[in-house]
Structure formats: structure tokens, C-alpha cells
Image 1 (cartoon, one colour):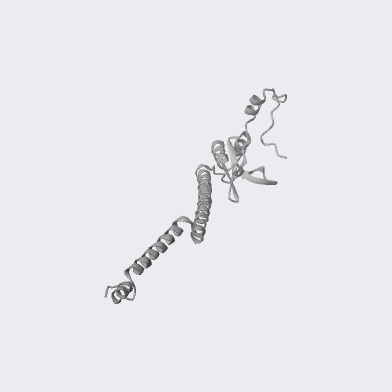
Image 2 (cartoon, rainbow, N blue to C red; image 1 turned 90 degrees about the vertical axis):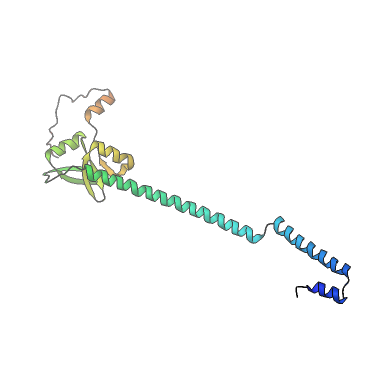
Amino acid sequence: MSNSLQDQLLKSGLVSKKQANQVRQEKRKQVKQQRTRKGGAPDEARLQTQRAQAQKRQRDRELNEQRQRAAQEQSAAARVRQLVEFNRVERGEGDKPFQFVDGSRVRKLYVKGAQRQDLSRGVLAIVKLGERYELVPAATALKIGETDPALVVLLNTSDKQNDEASGEEDPYAGFEVPDDLEW
């Protein structure tokens, strides 16, 4: 039963041994040619799948970069929020208005008298956290400014530092301006 058709034809005498060998050789040549065609010339379908895989890898890489950037932005925002929450100065029941500019609008924040002086001298700063404004020490405002400068709304520099930097003497140095002067 394991006899092939070729063997059966040989036994019956319908085909000679020479003809059977010739058919075997032709089959081997055909198989060999098919193997060389597959290995030699790349198949169009294989090229398309390789291109598709390369495009998919590129898209995945871009998506990962976007996710990493978003994660970095979120962590920076969380750091800023944490800095403000831990270092904010309580305003309490402020009775004196302090006006400052945020973008193109003038805002008013009620603070205590000592806090108003500290804001004017540059000891305290105003930062924007969401929709509210918080008072923080100047050092904290500088750290926040490194992460996101748009969040620091007001950070005054002291007049002594400005005078030393300019190297000029102030012609009005003898005249003091009262701190409680309101416009």
C-alpha cells in the first residue's frame, strides 16, 4: 500500500525505469526552482507586511513620546501645586487691598499690613494656582518660576539690588515714600 503510483506503473510495465527517473529529476528541478524563487526575489506581500510593521513601530514610538511628555507635564504641575500648598502664607482676614496685574487685568488681593510691605519689598510673591492667587516666599516663587514662569504673577526685586546693579546713585534717596500711600 505504501507503493507510489510510479512504482505501481513500473511493476505493471506501463512505464520504463528510464522514464520514471526522468520524471523524478524534473520534479526535483521544479522544487529546486521554486525554492530559489522564494529566497531570491522578495515577495510583494512580505514587503508590504514589513512596511506596515515599520509604520506601526514608528506610530508606537511617537505615542510613547507623547505619553512621556504628558506624564512629565503632570508631574511638574503636581510639584508646583505641592510647593504652593506647603509654602503658602496664610492671608487671614486681610484688611488692606494690594493691586497687581495678571496678564491684561488688574487684580486685587486683600492682605495684612505686614504682608503688603513684604510684597512691596520682594520678600513675598504672588503665584497663581488654578483660579486662585496665593502668597509664597520669594525663594519658593523662584523655584516655581524655573518650572513654569507663567504661574509667578508678582515677584518684586528689592530697590537695593536694582541700585547696586545700575551703579548709579538715586537722586531721590533722601526722600522716603510712605508705605501706606494709596492712589
